[in-house]
Image 1 (tube, rainbow over the protein chains, first blue to last red):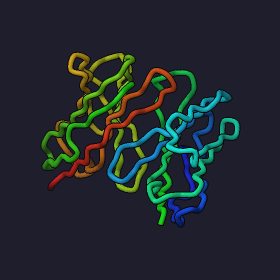
Image 2: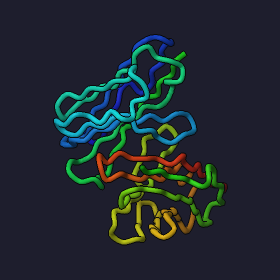
Image 3: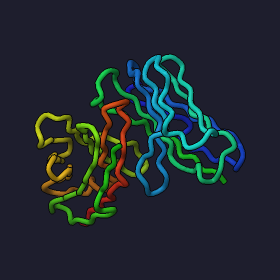
Amino acid sequence: GAGVSQSPSNKVTEKGKDVELRCDPISGHTALYWYRQRLGQGLEFLIYFQGNSAPDKSGLPSDRFSAERTGESVSTLTIQRTQQEDSAVYLCASSFPGRTTDTQYFGPGTRLTVL
Amino acid sequence: AQSVTQLDSHVSVSEGTPVLLRCNYSSSYSPSLFWYVQHPNKGLQLLLKYTSAATLVKGINGFEAEFKKSETSFHLTKPSAHMSDAAEYFCVVSAAAGNKLTFGGGTRVLVKP
């Protein structure tokens, strides 16, 4: 597609349930990032994938959070045993490889509400 | 380590008047700096970026920003605000390693007719 897409756009779940959020990056972008945006705040980095390298998981807030990426395409962010503090908009971004100044292009986000 | 501070959480301007959004940063590396805009219920859009070329950077929709190393600032300006500029604006710094972005807390802009 023309841009980064994410699904679902909205997700409401009950505390303790697991959720999966999906990101489709721009074709050809080998770098993929997940961020979290809590209400009224800026974005927090969660995890970074670059090609076949080991992902940078330094931003994941707890072991309930994990992410996978299939090759250089789709990524899934999984949150296990969701808590109310996990409620946020989860944003995915992708960029071209190689240069640290590459622009990251963001998807529309998934709004997660944990009741 | 790197951080970004947006000095104003809210800015209110009248249509047709100048807009100034202030941003200060700290970074252990020579930084790349960005401004992103987020309209309600829409994704983040890149306005402009600084990558060690010209210190005055022009972006889309009439916005520009000036990188001042001595002041560690990257303020965003526009000479004449338009109603469509009402949105939230984020100042962002990028680390040299891994290109992880660090976001400021955001500045919400209100444009009054």
